[in-house]
Length: 427
Length: 114
Image (cartoon, rainbow over all chains, first blue to last red; front, side):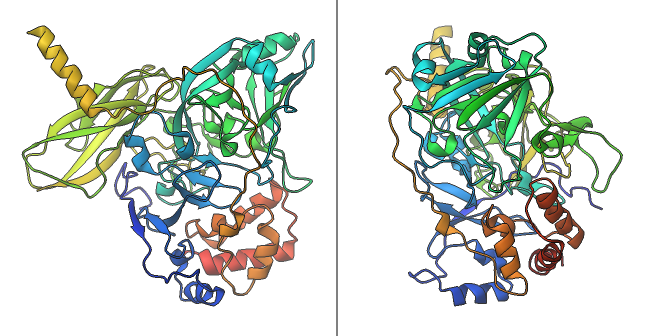
């Protein structure tokens, strides 16, 4: 009864509309309250004359305002004003595998991150179980250590939570809390080796310039094992797509953990502490945890399973050139393309099904930009019968993991990656 | 023949795959001083007025704007209680038990399952 009525239906219609229901002036508070008391809570998320996006979900507000008012950011979907949760509009993903910096999604836990950072005085502190505690300036990082570059998808652990069925609390992201970029910086291994990790060290904890709002609240930190931190891929980036980072994406320095959830990608990184024990903070022991079950999936109300910290990304594929509800010509060749990523390994194949997953055909992959990057895929289909059709794209990664057909559901709304169905029509 | 096919395929793939951004930059990287950024915090809509709206506003908006809450799905009273408990226990929101009850009442009324 609580099971999903349609497996893998996360790719929904997302119509962008101009709100023409209000006059040119900002609505008065009285009018705003009238809308609220009339039960029109959906109206509360709209702004006068503002562009909105409708994700067409039930069980809560389905529209969100679009904005261009955030610094260094272009057109974004507002999921939360403060601290900002800004989602990448999905049409951006059809334009290329790399997400433009000004449309890279934004997510902060605390509202107290600085609005200005002095590039001359900023320092990265490396301390704890090290032979030589360090303060590294941006100049040190840019000129005294070997450069490293990698393409990687940053995806919020709660991407697509909006489509959970039943709905769950949390950031109500549609499919756009993910972005792909080429990062330039230095390997964390080189920084740690310069400091000299002492014997007995097991973990490295990372913190940024954002502090908690309230004195007793937990600072946002995450940690990795020393072995992972020294794997030669985990890096500190001072540039994204060849430009310095936007402030809201972590200027001037960001931890990049290729293949792992964006919760680990600490923004405005200024503190690296080598420790003997795992980080005991609530961000690992209470939040960002998933059931230790197949595809992290449980039934609503189920109890008696173990929870484990979220770590690796899982494979996903999306159609980007067609939207739900689109009509295509019947009996004519129709290009279908999209993006995929393998999660913690590369994209091996992307397959497409036109018959609900009974049979699959392979697609042509675009240029390989690296193991952790988005990869484009494309094919041409001919939809013979007039009427409704469902397109399913499915990624298999180079580690052999394949997107499940069964819906992924857990109480936190994390790590969704079931095969999605794009409902279109042929006419 | 083979060569022609391959060129045709390449042309087709170039025509279909969007170009996207260049993978890397050839110009040397420099970090430039950045002016202070201005965040549009005034864009928030605020909580709809009603019994308890002053209590939820004064307890919750120190850490997050009201749209965080208003964008949530409709939840049962028990689920809302768990959300408020998490804010207190995990994130140390200094909310008195009396205010917590008022907040849950408010959320159940404005954002409850019906």
